[in-house]
Length: 150
Image (cartoon, rainbow, N blue to C red; front, side, top):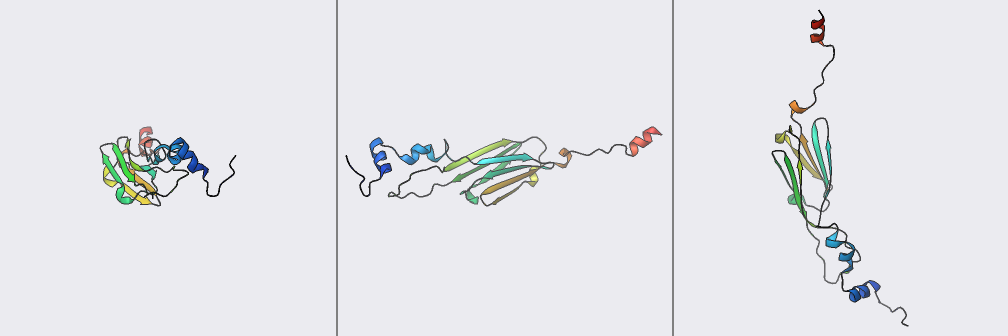
């Protein structure tokens, strides 16, 4: 029976015996199946639609936002970091690659006044509603109502 040897690495030995990359086995394709897919939050306020995406590690120059008719498309990529040949990974859960998400908007958005900002790894896109699409408050008992009674 062999005792523990100095410099013996059980993870390295397991990889040799089974012939696989432990990091890839724990997280296929570097994380989620199919590569990098950012998480989105989409909400509607009284006067706009707000899209927020968590895109840490994505450079602003690698983001593309388009609005065509009623379809908002947000695309980008997160580059894989350089891995040195001698590095040993015990977990490889971060994902990399290109992504593209398309959202269908309801009618009535103001495509001429879209705003986007990128701060702290969060993309924030604000698409205002056209003023005629925003809810209008109707006052009860206004002048018209009083004239109708007279």
